[in-house]
Length: 327
Image 1 (cartoon, rainbow, N blue to C red):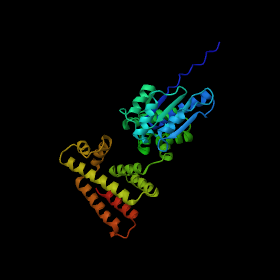
Image 2 (cartoon, rainbow, N blue to C red):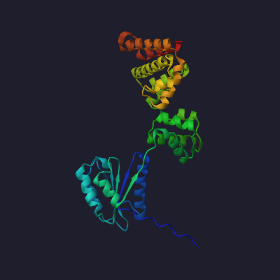
Image 3 (cartoon, one colour):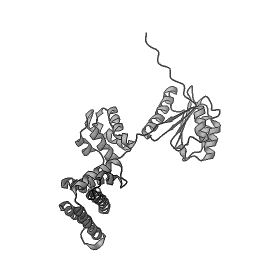
């Protein structure tokens, strides 16, 4: 005898779907739409509004309309933080006695717990809050998302993907989908990430400053070439490198005064990981050497502002060569 299918829980009159974890918010909203379509066999009972364009009155009017057939009517309002107080108060009053044949879903951020509409949702339905991982937990979250796609991502590969994409869940998900389409199921190598994944200009800049700090000539010019090829302005590269050299000079000077490099790097206001990196890089420079490097970039600043007839990208390359040659 076959087991009876599990009976679904009845939908609540109203849901608030919110939080910083955008993919989970979107997934929860999509599952709710799919549930209503599946139950009624059609999507004719689903009305979707955007609070940027529609008032709470539109939502109330739709929720007050009888559904087609035996299903419930789902009325979904997106970007609810865009509503003003009168709209929120009007909908909160409606939720004091919501119709049995409707389900209202409020999707988006911007609704505070102290507001009447938030409390009305708590009283009549359910609040679903999805919180994004902290920056420190993004590599682990990335590994979990890779596992869902049948990929095996090592800790180093996950950190590199986060460094390239930034702590942006949507961007990381897109890159993981790309890797899954290319590599199929299985282990992802660092070479796959470097070859396939989009690298933001900011990440390329960080790669370049790190390469300069470690005095890795081959890596410096590889990253510089990619930045310039992608259309990054030489002036932007100059300012990033000049800032990095200034930070290095402060840490080197502190070290030569007998102070701990890590503590002096942290005193610059850097987060722990960048501070640790720049403290390590400071060992590759002497005080006089980093001062000469800054002098080279001071001359470069004047050259790029018109003192020299050299193209800015060529002037930048020559200055970097001189910095790398400083002992």
